[in-house]
Amino acid sequence: MKKIFYYMLLSLSVVVGNTACSEDDENADHTAPGQVTNVRFTPNYGGGYFLYDIPEDDDFLYVRADYIVDSGEKVSKTCSTYGDTLFIEGFGQVKEYEVKLYSVDRDENVSAPVIQWVTPLEANMNMVAKTVKVRPGFSALIAEWTNELRQTVDVFVRLDDGEKVSEKVLSSNSEDGFFMIENLQNKDYTISTYVKDQYGNVSAVQDCGVIHPLEDAPLDKTPWTFLANQYLYGSHWDYDSDQDPEKQTPFPEYMGSFTNDSLKNAPESEFEGRIQKFWDGITYQKNPENWNIFNTGEYGYPYSYFIDLGRTVRGSRVRYHQRTTDAYGNENVQTFQLWISDDSDPADGITGWELVSTYKIVKPADQYEADLEAEAGHEFILYPKETKYTKPFRYLRFKALNGFTERMVSVGSEITLYGLEGE
Image 1 (cartoon, one colour):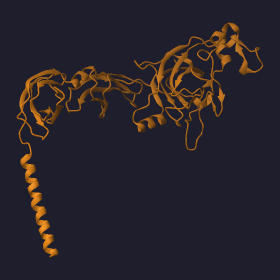
Image 2 (cartoon, rainbow, N blue to C red):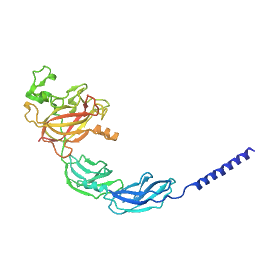
Image 3 (cartoon, one colour):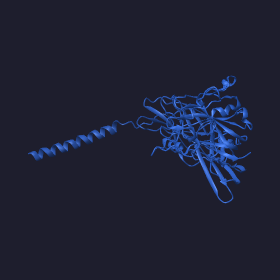
Image 4 (cartoon, rainbow, N blue to C red):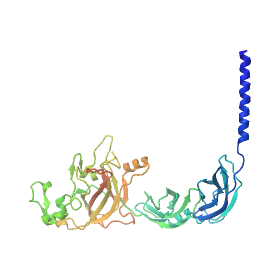
């Protein structure tokens, strides 16, 4: 009896199950929604947008546009029931393209297509390509361009040195693009550029001619010395004002410049740091920790350190190392300036200070890249907007404007100048 009862239940469940599936199929909506109507197209750069009236179907869900871009890739764009504007993009030429507009309902039924032939405006990658300029850098080339639409593009720079051809590429959506190709030799390079967008469209190749990078190298820091306060004022220093050199000051008529924001050094030595470590060629290490840093103590911002390079040089670039413990934070400097003086007769003090530029350390969004940059040092061209050496100078002022935090204590590990020896 038990066995017979079991089979009867099993059979019954199968019948009920089949009946339920059959009822679902019968109740499903297989009716396609109506088409969009009153379609209008407005062209834009590499695409455009459609305006239309949606169908009156209660279960209408969205409109879909299907089209083929120049690479042969099929692209689909959608707009929900709450919108009446559908944007399309990815066209690489100013010509007619076929676009099919479909209405789709909640059961994924699709209407017959409404076929539109559209002609976009010039593609953004072509507009960007026309703005790409390449100029010589220091042992480098610098590519710059404008991307007003801020669409992601890949900018390619092709280099031919007569022996081999190589390409460098940078992907960017910045409005003002900047790309430095470093570690180049002191010789001629034939340069060309082109731009590619995310849909595979490629601009025409632009010939940039022959460009020769400017020569520079790290400057020897062995002759560098700390330029103490009394040397900044020379004969205007009041050595009799106090027996303690740390408490001596310039003569009263020169006290107006003896401030943290002018001709005055931050403490030469504080806690574990001293300023001479700033140019000793040894960067801060964490494991084991070598404490190779300068430390201002509770001095605050802004502050300055003055350095005698020991001879005349012409500068091109600077590389700055943070303390990599708490990089991009804590007591590290974020923004600084470099000033130079070519005073050839400093008997009455070092004068003729000239601001080179202001430099800000910006943390890369990717943490791995941020760590690599902090370890390698942050490099800046001394004149960011143009490729040129400084005037010949001997005296350097490092002025820190602010840190990554509001802490009064400030630290740094190493500074390196690049350029040419002599005048």
